Image 1 (cartoon, rainbow, N blue to C red):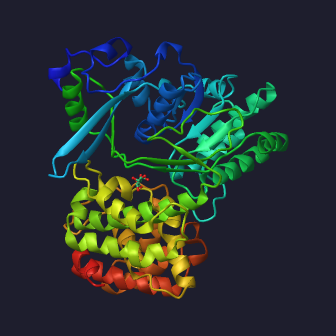
Image 2: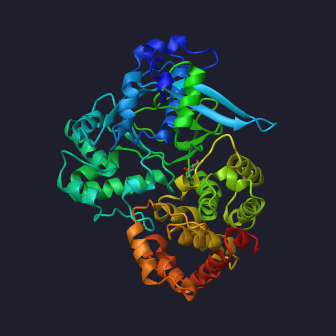
Image 3: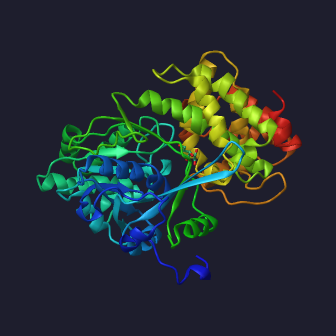
Length: 505
Ligand code: CS2
């Protein structure tokens, strides 16, 4: 926040009435709001997706039992910013109009009551999970937050946080440990079960969460695992909204529009989808409002489609763009060669692997996606998407590669995306600018690549070293055909650069 705002009013319960008329605000009496949801991982995505949909539900239904207690696993920043604001923050939705001018719609979200910081007081988090009013525990902890082996979905018992939490039940550090120890308290106290709702971009995220929770619980106490398996539900859900990290420029622009400071706004695209299996064991908010969620019997087909059609191309574009020195997704989409590559990747290699989902038009989905990625009003950093590739690529790209291979069909654009990931893992772009690699498996991956050497004839060795890594590649590990195809593209990337590589098709 700049000094010009230091005297300004701050967003909070008592300043809500002073907001400009075009800023939407909670349509219910917040003083009556009671906590019903504990949410682990109260980052920007949750605050731009599930929390505003909860806000809609509260306003439309008048059922005020569904306030959110947010949990930050590590950093106190969100709590420190939101506590003086009574949990209130602004959601800014950004897109461009027909003339290419930016449009911004602001609303103040009121569904978050309080934020707890697990690293400071995990006891408070456990107590909240075990509170009689808690009916849902939801999560957005990102792929790596599940501490699973990406290729198999098995719990990584060697993960230091998991190992710690298996030994110590009073101060868990991992999301899985926190859930299980919180559920143990509920079980011991004879309280009703809760619904555990994963909202992360994982395939069958509810089933995945269930598997991990039961595995962890079984290692602690088989009786607890039985109680959880018999009583708690884990609906699968598909979540979709592009939510870049908030910047200081966002904070300043939003403060100007609000006429007051908001230390912790979020920005996103207007588009939102949330598809959830309606299996709630202890009630749920009326999330199915216009512009909100949709309840279905099986969410897996929607998740599958979304991971392959939205996140797959996102990652492919991000790795190419980082190497090309392009900072944002919309900048990359403005490059005709990259745009055409992405379009063809979806059309020729991804779409043919997808089964039709009732009510979903794949052509319209692709066109909408290209428009969403081209949204220049919403700078989305390619580096943000590039992080944690080891956790993302199995469900985003490798399943599609497998299906193409099985069908005897080409997968050269997918192979280029993998080659771009391999190139990204060098840690510097085509102009030689270095960047940090954020990935929980970065050390292992880089050690493998380093052992293959750096010389001009080592593309195939590097590809073999990368693709030989079973925790990511699973049954594709060591596949010589894939290594050769990836090496072929890696050579073009290295020798001629990204733009030449995407023009090859
Ligand atoms: C992105 C996603 O950061 C990433 O890896 O691909 O966060 C993406 O923006 C969302 O899943 C869109 O719903």
